Image 1 (cartoon, rainbow, N blue to C red):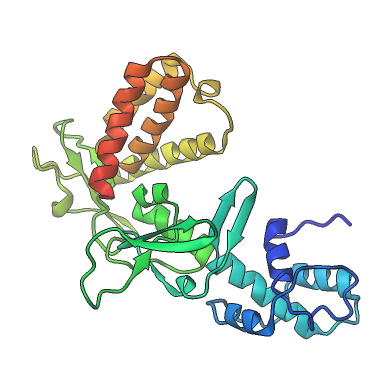
Image 2 (cartoon, rainbow, N blue to C red):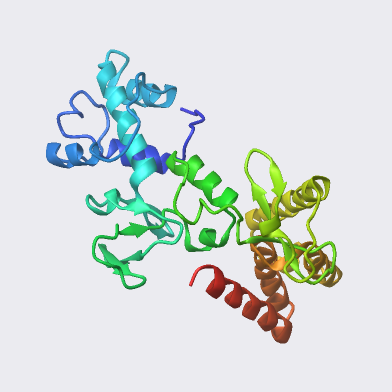
Length: 307
């Protein structure tokens, strides 16, 4: 039967595969199952406790167990769905796969984590990114590595959408976002920063260090408006498949870099993201020298922002 679901089918499959053999009594289909202990461990992971099952969970239960199935089954399925959405680790890209691990699922997120993880076969391996003093909490990133190069607002938005919390790590609590540097409107060489909260605030701490220029509130708002347009464009490119040569021309690539240099300083995450698209464009165009110059800039940005 055709029905639109809120999430991709794989998430519902993961939730169904987390039911026990007892849960499957009366089911008219065959699914993988877990032991009672495994399910109890899964339900120990963070997830909001549903008061009522979603329409999706009800539909699945009615489809496979019939309309007389206990409502508690749909609630359990809803809980397990949330467990997978909020606590899993990406396991593979082709085909897309996810996994859960009991102890690693309790590791906190940080936008500058002291640990990183990877797989050795199907085993979860945790490694330190730096020396960790005794007593310091172990942290990993819940975001992809490239997302850690983005602005505070972007990182927080992704975490709120996917993990349902507002990041308050030390990197996100700074008053000036170090990867939102704008080109100074005064000397055209330095950079200026703003405080971002409920409103955009030019401040002395973010004034140009070359010439001392301090933007007005109106100028700050205009720059941020232009920034939003660039971000929307970059997001559109990110969704495109295939070579960058399919959505950029040589004239556009040249003009794009000029415009980025006028709007952003070298320490702006969107200028870095645009540069990555330009690397792809010039590689596809056979201009290895220009591609390498942009790649070097991206490497320098990464080393400074996420050492």
